[in-house]
Image (tube, rainbow, N blue to C red):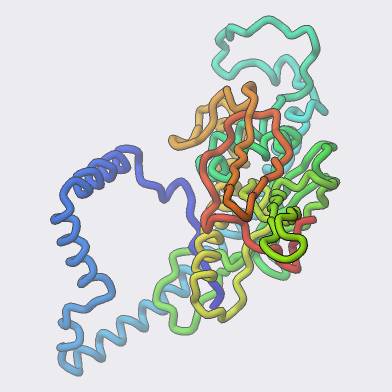
Length: 386
């Protein structure tokens, strides 16, 4: 079977207090290598092992154990049916929420101005507001950029060179579907910008609610695959790649000492690699490459899950900080400080490398994290970027 990952969400995360306890335990273990080694050895014996008790049971008891396992298969079938019914309920309420999200998009973009009643604070308290700006402000500037920075998983893949592009992000919405497969599509809507021609970028996720034969456990649907879209970049604006120039000096012959410059395009981390997920062929053997792709795909599924279930429905709470992720990577400086690029050189007698800077952003610090699996994957034929 293709690589799959169970759907996860905020509800599955440990409470903050538990996280602190785990951090404390980790610190103690790191200071006692002997204890850590002993614990690892003991766990290594336990994981995937057997105490031998079940194997030693009498044949008639083994038969009863098999009967219980068959009952468990029936239990898994009921769990599968339950989640399918939950899916239908999700579709019903997703449709009911669409008008709310559509109005939110209009307010954010400036297409709709709320009435005095709609704009009244929820707590009925007078807010201390700064003086009005000389130039009228349209909509809510940088709304979605601020939202993405306030969520840990999305903040981790935003780079300096992504900031200015994400200033043009006007809305993120979800489209649920059940035919021909079950899944959902994330739709990123952009205003006209100098970076790419697309008005919308999409990311589609497919989910599996079916059971394998004699499956004894079903804890919910799993992600089966992800599909991106083609980004039609303007010339020289593709932030998912950078240009490297390498100077080579000829060592021998009549042209000895002559220098030539070789230019090549190499991939680099970017939020927009999100629209080019790795593809793992069905039945692919496990290699270092497929393991790296699985790690990156695992992070990709997690980001899609967070966007669909938490970020998009609660965007305003992420924007105001009321639902800010504890480990988010957002502060006010991300929108008013000048950022810089980091070029490196590797000089030797024969070769010198120069890196052409990626398009500079007006934004600032950006996310510090990198996508799982390191550099972005090679372009796939179904979903490449130009």
